[in-house]
Length: 264
Length: 208
Image: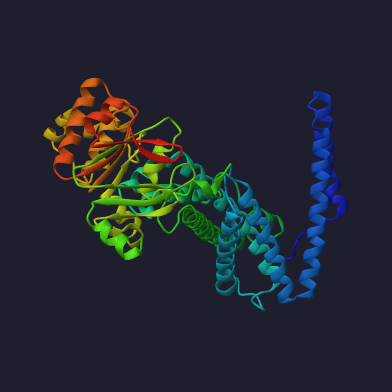
C-alpha cells in the first residue's frame, strides 16, 4: 500500500470552508466567527504539534519514552473521567477511580492487541502502541465517565432505597447492586451503539482514513473489526471497573452508605 | 467500669448502649429489656433520628452496643441490623412492585391487621399512599422478627384508625418479647406505648 500523501496546498481548499463558516456567521449575525476561527487554528496547531512529537518518538524508538507518552495520555484521560460527573468523591476519590480503572482497562486491551493481533517488532513499537492506546483511551474515557456519573448520581437519588435494604440487614454489595448494574450498562451503551451502527449509518473513522489512504477495503474492514473488539473490551472493563470501585469507596468496614464522602 | 464487668452487666439486658455519640447527639447510654419500649421525644433537629441511626450502625460514630451481651463491634454489621432493625420515617423502596420487598409474602390476615388491602402486594409502590407505604415498611421490618425495633415516627402519615391498628400490632410485638426505641412527636403515643419515656435535649437523654 502506498499512502496517498497530502501537501500543504491541498489543505488550502478545505481551509476555505472555515472562511465560509466565518462569513456565514458574520452575514447572519451569529457572532460565532471568532470562535470558529480560533477553534480551527487551535486544532491545526495541536495536531501539528502532536505530529511532530509522534515523529520524534517514532524516530527515537525508545521503550521508556513510549511508555511515558502513553502514561501521560492515561493521566489526562483519568482527569477527564474524574471531572465529568456532577458529583465528586471526596479526597480525590474520582481521580483515584479514574486513574486506576482507565490505566488498567487501557493497558490490558492494548497489550492484548500488541501481543496477539498486530505483533509489531518490537512489541512495544511506538508507531503501533501509541495510536492504539489513544483510540482505546478515547472509548475507555467515555465508558468510564458515563458509568461514574450514573453511579454517583444514582446513589444520591436512591439513598432511601439503599439504606432501607441496609437497615433490613442486607449486605452493602446487595443493596448497591442495581446501581452498579445500571452504571455499567450506561457505560457500555455507546460502544454497543457504535458496533450495531458500524458501516450502516457511518463508516467508522479509522476505516475511512485507511480507505482514503489507499488501503484495500477488506483489509481496512479487518482493522476496524479488530478495533471494535478492542474498544468493546476496554469499555466493558472500564464501565464495570468504575462502578465496582466507586461503590466500594462509598462504603466502609461496617457496610454503611457513606454519602458524606460525596460532594456536589 | 472495667470491660469485663461491663460485659457481664450487659448480659442481663436485651439491648444496652454505652457512650453512643455522633455529630449531634450523645454521649447517650440506655438499656432495654424484653417487652420494654423507650419512647423518645424532643424538638425537631434534636438528633432523634441520628440516635436511631447510630444504634443501627448506619452512620459513623463512637460508642458500643450489646445485644444479649454480644458486642456489636464483634459481629458483621448486617447480622446486627437484621436483629436490631431500623425503620426510617421516610420508607425506602428498591423494586417497582410492593411484593418484591418481602422475602415471603405476608398473608391476608396479617395485611388486614395493618388495615392494608388484600391485593396491595401486587400494586406498584408508586401507586401506594404515603400511609400505606409507612405501614408496609413496618410490616417489612416485623417480618424479620427483630429482637429490637428502632422506629422513627412510625405513624406520622396515618389517620387515627390506622394509628390505633399500628399501635395494637406494636403492643403485641412487645408482649411477645420484643423491645423498641420509638421516636415520636406525639406525646400521647409516647404515653400509650412507652414503658420508659425520655426527651432528647442538647444531645442527652433525660427522663421526661
